[in-house]
Length: 156
Image (cartoon, rainbow, N blue to C red; front, side):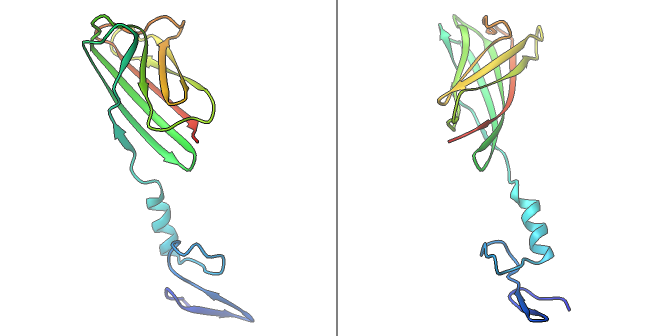
């Protein structure tokens, strides 16, 4: 017997109702196979893309941009950011920008400059501010550089 959405299936003395979706979030209802497939196929959803304002710990960029892509799953944020330094101007020190979420604690990770020298870099986030430096904690900032970082953090 194949149940239809919202129908009751009798199995011996146990009655099982089916609602066809996860919307009701009920322990007493069993979603159909189609509802499970739809939920799994769409639960991930699209990534959010934003362009945070980039600054430096010292000086000012003439031309810089950032493309930040992230996905929030519960309290977990998965992200990748690409900072493109077209003209460094007087900027030096660390690359700084604010993330659209706040970590529970300080997190750190790595990345790479992908356009010129290929230097490894590191990132650290405290409160919502992302801080990026070269692998040895010197400045990664220079005209023509493209810095890519990725990470996963726990958010508040």
